[in-house]
Structures are given as structure tokens and as C-alpha cells.
Length: 148
Image (cartoon, rainbow, N blue to C red; front, side):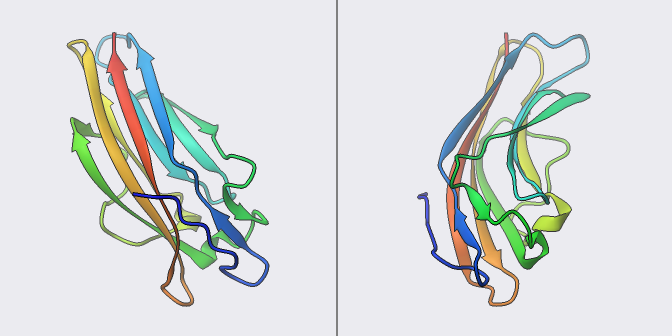
């Protein structure tokens, strides 16, 4: 897809998303899968999700201009995602192809169990203003879950 920058979503709010790749690489303990994904935080942060299925880590991955400025009013926005997934969806993924309020922290990703290898997904995320239903930002995130 593409990054789409919009000057104003709600009065004073600026939205901007940057294409990113998230890699989660490890040799998880028995019974665990590797997880790689993205979360739209209710705090205005964009998070990379990585780790094992029972020990996910959420790391802020905003570029200085990413997501929303100022970092408030999250309930005024909804997120929508589609995927070209090669592998298993992350068990904790939000629904795809459904608008989800950003205050609920929607998240999407891919996971990989044994044997060693990589599962990847390109997750296309759109953000829209609830009040107008107009898409204000759109971007692709590439997520790679690799078991070594």
C-alpha cells in the first residue's frame, strides 16, 4: 500500500503512519510460537508486538511524526486491517476487515511454531475518523515470525 499523510483529522490532530517491518526471531521454549505483529495503542502509540505466544512484548515503534499528534482522542478513530498472510494468524489478532475503535487497542499479527522457519504477513492498516468515516491514514506493516 502506501503511507497517507493527512493534515487534519479532528481539529488540531495530525495523523501520519510510516511503513515498517517487524521481525521476531528466536528459539522459543517447547509449546511456544514466535509472534510478530502490530498494535494501535489507545495511548496514541503504535506498537511492535514480538516474542513468544505467552510472553508478548509491546514496544513503541512510532517515528517522531507517526500516528497521532497530540496523543489523545483515540476514541475518535477506528482501525481496519487486511492481510496477505503466509502462515498462521496470531491467536490474539483482532478481526480483519472490520472497523475497530482505537480505544480498544486493535492488534494483528502472525505466529510460527516448530519446525524452524519463517511465517510472514503484510498487514495493511487504515485509520479513519469516527465522525466522518473518512480514511485519514493508511500503511502496510510487514511482520515476520521466525523460529531458529
